[in-house]
Length: 92
Image 1: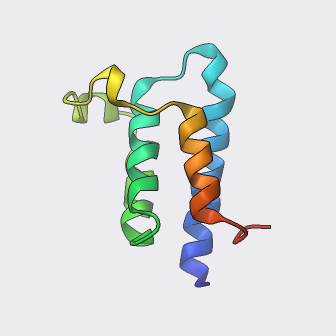
Image 2 (image 1 turned 45 degrees about the horizontal axis):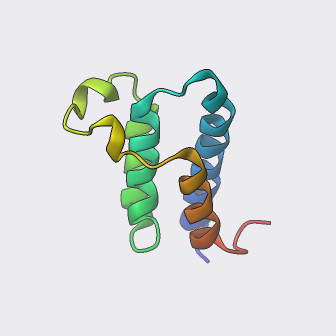
């Protein structure tokens, strides 16, 4: 496994852990949307996933993607489940 992939997987996991900890407080919708986008491309293109994580870190994301409706975003639990499937045993 390349160092770049491991870096993206660890970065994704950090963001997901933050999202999970904020879920009880009513996490901001755009965080889940962009974490989901990163996860969607992670298996095939970790560089693109890294770019999505860059977007997640930017403060104005909610205004950049108004086309995403609340009902379309996956739950935090769904994102965690899919991440576990994608990352498998790559991170120890």
